Length: 382
Ligand SMILES: NC(=O)c1ccc[n+]([C@@H]2O[C@H](COP(=O)([O-])OP(=O)(O)OC[C@H]3O[C@@H](n4cnc5c(N)ncnc54)[C@H](O)[C@@H]3O)[C@@H](O)[C@H]2O)c1
Image (tube, rainbow, N blue to C red; front, top):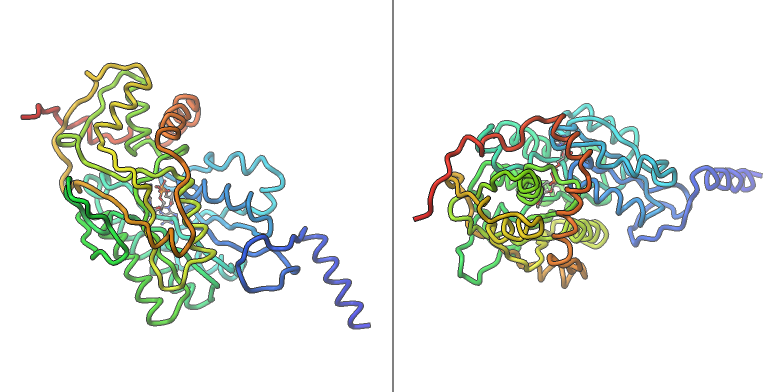
């Protein structure tokens, strides 16, 4: 009788939870009992929204709880297609909140008992960390990470990925063949990267001290749809489309290793599925491009004159070159970038031109973008 009751209860549970056999190789939990819970933080931002959409579609045995403070760069419109998709929506929950708010974070752990976590929540704009101030960066990128780690220590988790940046490694010189490996010493040069490094080091310490199952990832510069337009590619695209000048710091020859956002998302996915606790993985696309080249490509695509290129005084602490060695992720996670810059840059540029309402709403909500640049006088290169 007890056996029949238990079998019936399981059938009912399966019916209501629409249980599928897990398609992932994530361990733990009974295969047929319920959805696995993935706690995502900062999922209303640029990379987080891509990750949520991708993960919900690929893993029907998962539900996602997205905790986001909705700062100026957080935007629920980034996930409006998920909200319109009934199949995805039933496995997606949004909670507004701050990762630095212990009560809020603990309430998510108590209510949803997450099996897995990915932290995207961060203050992310280097310029702001210099011109607006570093406090919010410390609050979120260091103290917020501490609050998440304490919650993981208290409630447990099967695996958590903390998403970080290649900028923690500092700067490389142009002309050298050096790239950042996972063993490169942290040498952050601006408050943004210093606070990210602080959060990363806390993860290291919490893994070694309490054996928490944490993985940290360091990715190079991302581009793609839904990026808040303070960042270089949408910023230049929108300015060029309005015939405004494109302000280039210094000589414009600073180099970044540009990666399409979905390649980064696939890296985070693999770090969650296959990453070894306590390990660090770098992601980069071997695609080093100077800022001035990007500006020229965008002007070209829009049929605008190169007269719009304007050199402005360099940013304090401006790192010269980033380049990422991602051999470890390729070998251990089976990751490799699959999107080409040549194809995805024009697609990305077109997306910002086609999505005028998204752009207008962002501008209306957050006001002038990168206001500090307009205050700076153009200068001539010697
Ligand atoms: N964009 C890149 O090129 C890039 C490259 C490498 C690594 N990263 C890292 O990836 C992560 C995501 O970056 P992004 O480009 O999507 O950033 P973003 O600025 O677009 O989004 C950040 C999100 O975090 C939310 N948030 C900020 N503070 C919060 C807090 N205290 N509590 C809860 N939510 C908060 C914001 O509302 C926003 O939705 C960051 O950790 C960043 O350091 C970004």
